[in-house]
Length: 180
Length: 190
Image (cartoon, rainbow over all chains, first blue to last red; front, side, top):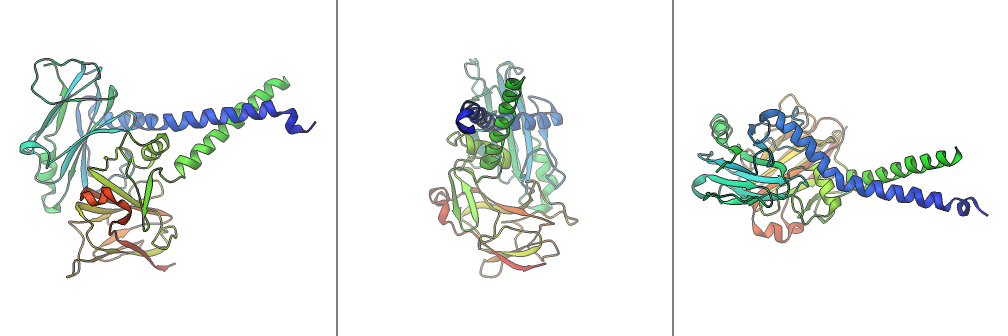
């Protein structure tokens, strides 16, 4: 009997372990990377609050492949800690491209709205957990697929001579727990 | 005792093989659902829940927090137009015209997917900053040393470039493999 025939059960077990580890690592990788990103971002402003990052440079190590032409403001959300609803708003944003996007812990971009789609150059909405009922609000409601995630504002520096003005205005973006 | 060693070997070798497969498919592999346009590659499923687990893992590693295709399309090139890997030892010319989009930029990244350190702190050219010829065309230079008005420093080693198209015209999402994107031509090498 050959060595292969004698050890086929061990070989099959090795392949089964390899398959299991491979599938688990592929499936879990995005969530692990999101956990790392949310931990890094929440060091700036905490959770359920907007942090306004510096302009990306080669020293920026929070998120891969940042754009040096954009200013990023991020709000790590935890809807359980927010009581189920988070208000995201921005008024008087700069006159350039900007967008607000929301990502769940599986890295899905489940919501995005840009300056051209925003009414009167402003955005104001509630981010709520699945199954949450929000009373007494006229604000649009966005349902987050996961209770934790990231809301990200991108603001384009379309004119270097107006950098200070753009940087000041993009800080109007905010998020906070909503209690009705 | 012998059986315990065999079980340990199964676990260690199995885990190593599994992680090797993940490295080959996700870390080194190309994005699933991808399309090529010259040296540029993109995936229409970036940021989308339509992407499968492999694409999701690759995006998380190489392009976390990517927007969906209606908002932004991200093209990445790790080779020149002849298919050779981009190297800091060579000079490259990016030649083209404005693509059909509201705003665009071309940015160089090191092998670690972060911006490349350089004394000038230059990392990109964009629709706003690029210097064009009178006919609207432009040439940007990717090089370690000084490269003129449209210079993007590359540093040492291998690198890649990303072209972001914000609010692209509908034609881009409809046919991302046939957008008139710039070419990347290799010049002199050390």
